[in-house]
Image 1 (cartoon, rainbow, N blue to C red):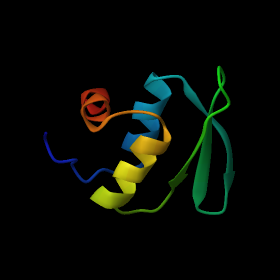
Image 2: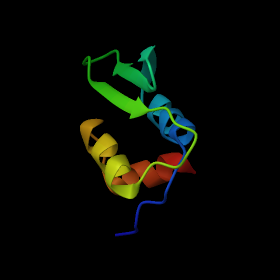
Image 3: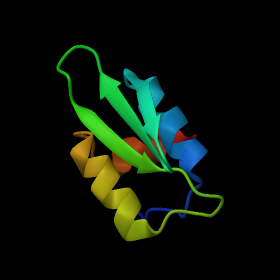
Image 4: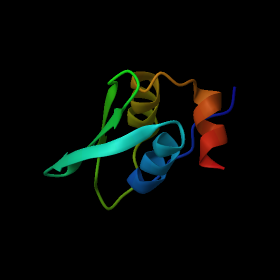
Amino acid sequence: MPRLPTVKPRQVIRALERVGFEIDHQTGSHVVLRRADDGCRVIVPWHNRDLGRGLTLRIVKSAGLTRDEFIELLR
């Protein structure tokens, strides 16, 4: 199983948009995305630095994706 790369918040948001998430709103430095079909919400910190691997993995799992699916979405 490949390691998750460190990614920028914008890359995470783009990957999630590819699987049906849309930006719902932004509160401070956090962007809230929502999937229309089931209402699943994911919160992504919006900072000017890379997200850590642990945080990225938690975001991926809360979106209902596997690590490999997410890595494919980044390409």
